[in-house]
Amino acid sequence: MFIGEFTHTLDDKKRLSLPSKFRKELGKKVIITHGLDNCLFMFTLPQWSKIAEQLGNSSIGNADARGFNRIMLAGAVEIEIDTAGRVLIPDFLRQYAGVTSVEDKKEVTKLVFAGVHTRIEIWEEKKWKSYKEKILKQADSLAAKLSSIGAI
Image (tube, rainbow, N blue to C red; front, top):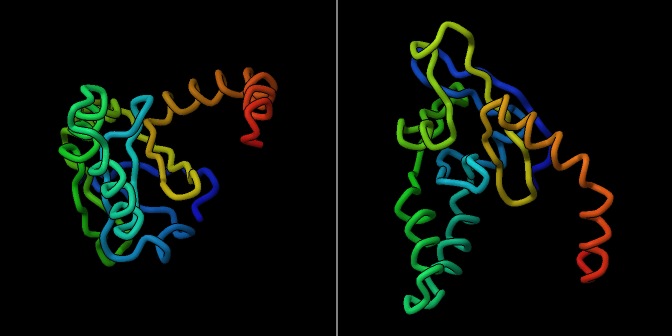
């Protein structure tokens, strides 16, 4: 299970060091794809197999299902973790998440890894802070809504 929040920087070769807490559970390869709310989703290979199976079982007659499958599956990339625990995120996924590389601007590019049970979300730091601030303000009402449907 992935939990916790960790901030890391993108290096000058566009590599991202994974939090040491997550490395053992991730294995040697991961899947990274478009996430929701302009973040990236990272999955272990076994977890991705489950997700892909569920997506594959959705109706191709449903336009929403087709669209979501295209984003999640066509945008997915299998990435090898190097011996130093780093990954190279493809440009199209970095652009989707609003992550610029160090040559794109003079400041250091910081990314946040958020452990969310079966996945890791990768956020551009400023977007994460803004999102988290918004959600924290709604925490009580969100808890009430989830409680009313028996989710918590």
